[in-house]
Image 1 (cartoon, rainbow, N blue to C red):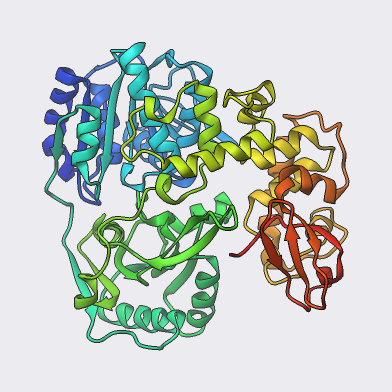
Image 2: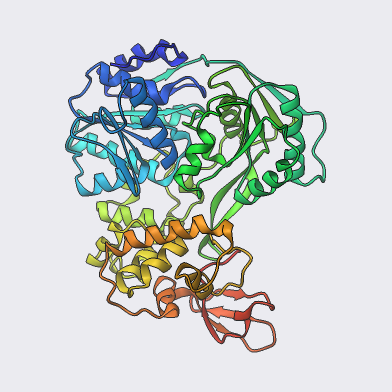
Length: 549
């Protein structure tokens, strides 16, 4: 069916992939960045008529899901939503004729929980499985159980450029197919000596200017987060060559701005400043240069505080390989690395799976809803029993599990809300302002650096306080999500801000200790300290919705 008029390296192994699926119903596919697996494999499966059902392909991010669907639809000469569609949180383009549906990982979990036999679905493809999100690991475990008990005809594919394939293949009882080729050569360039004490943003800006002077084409610069992107953007704004356009790309940007970042420039060159959102499944036209700052940001669950916090870490070799591969998607390219060749040998091979370091509360709720113990399912990396027990204790505190560990009716309601169970509990039991507060707490703080009082943020969302221009897109996104949540709940409970926060965090109600310093003992037994200059520092009681460890 595909009318693509150019060859990609993955094409050479597509017959082997199809053969493996015909023989075993499962396959693990390894292919380097730029090989074409994301767009070619689903279409090849459709062409081969392996199934009469829809082909679901999971992507770790909404932008990647929409972009993959658009590229496949374009290759068929169709609009998105016809043969190829997508479904992500808050947006979809599907029709009765859709045969390939690209979805984000959480959507598969909901589909499985609602209808375990996946009616109308013939195949599930786990793209970029190396990212090992909780939803991907859980989705694969549930699919394996469904295939074993209800759907022996369900086809399963795991794909990645940098996956440690052997454990996944053993779990799936699947053959491994490897594509060795890549579209274009990428030449690596390391620093001659370690970076030293130079500030990361300055070093990245200097390296970007050097790269643009040495190599042709547009550039993709990998940075750990929005803050670093904005600072590098400010440094480059007045120093870039006149033919260069700057474009930020990170998850909190609105979709139009993300689209602008990945769209080809009409003339001149583009410099895209991106987080790891651009590591996988995105093709940015004209990119021939990658500059890698060598840092990534991930959520790390801290058992001491009982909360997740973002940490900035060195990239792994697998992540560096993914990033460098972006330079060889459409032409030969160069990958500049902000570390020496010797330092590369000290990098870890793979990043940890989210099941090893992430918050397991939502995961534990999904297990309870499925009606299974973790040891009864097949995971590439099983969850740590102690950390899973801590998550289950939180669910019991919220009334989502009973004393025997079974899910309650309230827990079933929480599982239907697209929120962390704490915030879902607040929305389910709270008043009209609960959806807005939940949407705010689910987002990265739109007023970082401001006093900690949540009422300041709620006032900005309600239009009672003027927010700085950079906060406007985040505030708009929070309000849109709050409206969506509001349609899913009654909102007839208590509405005072402190009471709502206490519903979500009953173990983090803080009582000020005696003494001059603003130190608090939390109801769960832990402690917290406020900056002395914060206006909330004199409060006798408060709720700690966020702790920085």
